[in-house]
Image (cartoon, rainbow, N blue to C red; front, side):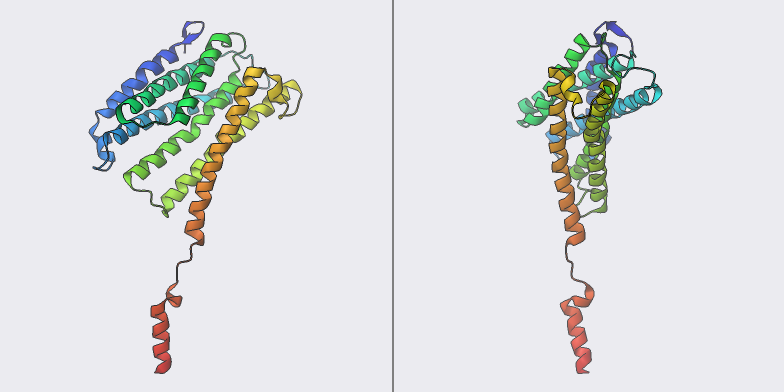
Length: 277
C-alpha cells in the first residue's frame, strides 16, 4: 500500500493494469463463454466479463473498507485527519477501476453501438472526485472513516451483477423464488450501504462538529456539499426504482389469484354429477 509519489498510490497503477488483464483472461476462458446461452451475442459475452471484473473489484473494496472501519478505534482517532495507507489504497484502486471501466463503456459504444449515459456520467464524476482527492487531500485531510464508508457502497454490486447473469442465462423467471430472493437481497443491501451509509456519514460529521446530521453537509465546504448531496439523491432515486420492481414482483407472486382445484370448472362438473346421482 505504498505510494510512488505523495499523490499516486500503487493501487492506482494496479487497478489500471490488473483489471484489464483480468478482463482479457476471462475473455479467453471456455467456461465463461459456456455460461451464457448459445444465442448470446459478442456484446453480452464481453458484458459478462466486465461484470465479473466489477464484482471482483467491489468485493476487494468492501472487504478492505470493513477492515478499515472495524480495526481503528474511532473514539481515539479523528475521522478526518487519522492517517493510514489504506485510505489512498482504496481511492487509488477505485480510480484505476473506474478509469478502465469507462474505457470499456466507450469501447461498447464504438464496437456494438450500446452504452449507458447514466453510468458514463457517474464514472466520470467519481473519477474527477477521486483524482481531486488524491491531489488535494491525501496528505492534509485524508478522511479515512468516510473513504471506508464510501467503499462499502460497493457491497450491492456483486448482487446486482449476479442478478444480471442469472437473467441472461435464463434461470431467473418472473415468479421464481430465486428471483425474489436476489431482488430482496439487492434492495436491502443497496439501502443499507448506499442510503443509510450516506446518512450515517452526515451523522458522523455532525457529531464531530456538534450539529445535527442534516446541518453537517453545509459545513464541510461547497465542493463536498454538492458531491454528498448529489450522491445521496442519486442513490435514493435508484433505490426507489429497485423498490418498485420488487413490490411489483411480490404483488404478482403473492396477490395473483390462481383458481384453486375446488373452484375450477372441472371440479364444479364433478360436484353437479354427484348431486344428480
